[in-house]
Length: 572
Image (cartoon, rainbow, N blue to C red; front, side, top):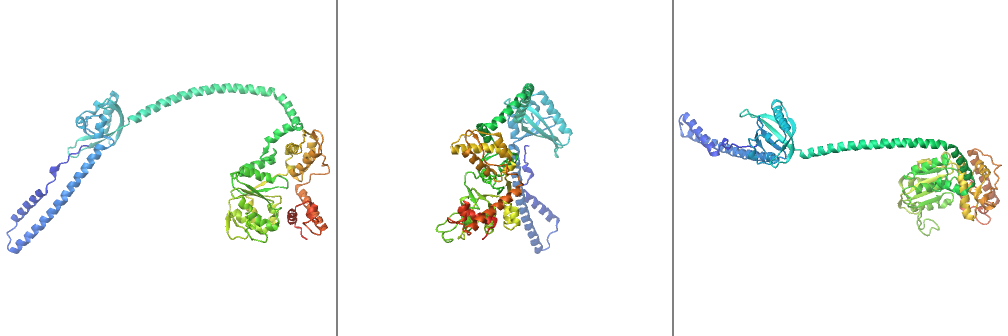
């Protein structure tokens, strides 16, 4: 709104002083003449005080006037330069006031717009009626009213304006004015129109595409019906093909190798439910850095499962270090695992890194963890918990980032109850236990394993065995395999060496074996091995190493024999 400041309403300091002097003279004229000089002096003093007060008030009034003028100037600037067009209309719709932004919307100088009818800038008759109705509504309703109209400026450019109006009454002359703000929404309106056209076009496209899909669906339904009829007509032929495929699978090694490749997981071969469950567990845990405990009988392939976990982990590009806890001498296990400093013990002439340091960033596989001495289990527990240890003979702590996979053919829970294995270490290792099933629980895999092993030893020995009879496979599948896959591998290797012709002939006798319960089978084997070792030790006078030692008679490495003695608790 345009603002005029009435400067005559504010008196100058000289005017205020004249008015004060006139009042003072009038006051003196009313008062009686002073009776003495003292009274006159007192009155002069009061006059001077009043004069000072008037001067101070004059200064305050001047400051207030300057501040008022500054505020009015800022208000006028904000009003003119606002991003919204502000109009003041009278009740007939004539423009009484307009800011610079409003004048720019219409493209006409502000002075030329005054007393002009705003309806003259509205392009369409419908919008003029809408504007008139808008003014009437604002005059008769309390509050803010809104509408949207189209109007054009002096340059003929069509604009869309969003109006927001309110009626006010001036206190001076009690006249009614309408204050209106106009926002240019031309771009938004154009975008709305484009969006509407796009929506209509999209609906049309969707209808067309839906019709095409319905036609394709009808055609597909017809094809499915034809396919079902064709499938029903081929059921008899499919049954014959299936029987022929099974017969060829039994007789032809090449076809069996295709099946082997299909059911090979890393280096593990199998398709039975028992081994498939192991595969799914490996897939679950391999990408994580979780500690894994592999349980199972000797010869079930715990090492292959550990290798599969490592190869599918994020550490596959780093080393996997294998430690066989039964093959390490008891007095060297600690230095082998954690390393040693030069001079840590007699014969330690050089500094040596341990297996955990070698596996830093990769995986360490602790096979037969149940054979680890109790005094080292505590140190292993610390490595699992904190990832740190000290080399033998060194006070400095070494930190490593190593994933641990442990394996055991023992029942570690029984070892814990017997006091031969730490309970806290057992729970740390068995975060994700995986039990490898024995071969007698996965007889469906024996045919695949036999085919794989025959191909393996054909290449090794230069043989060309092509078939394995159904009778031979039946015998192999009925045998309980106490030595599991390792025992089967030995049997097939002997058969490849001794067989003649192109058909594999297994000469081992399995008819004397009966399939015992698992616990009885393991117990009898353990007792047999225990008794045999004791007999050889007694025969050699408890000598382990040397040409006349028990290790030579048993065809074992001396360290392996010592590990077996610790396993079975054999003492002299």
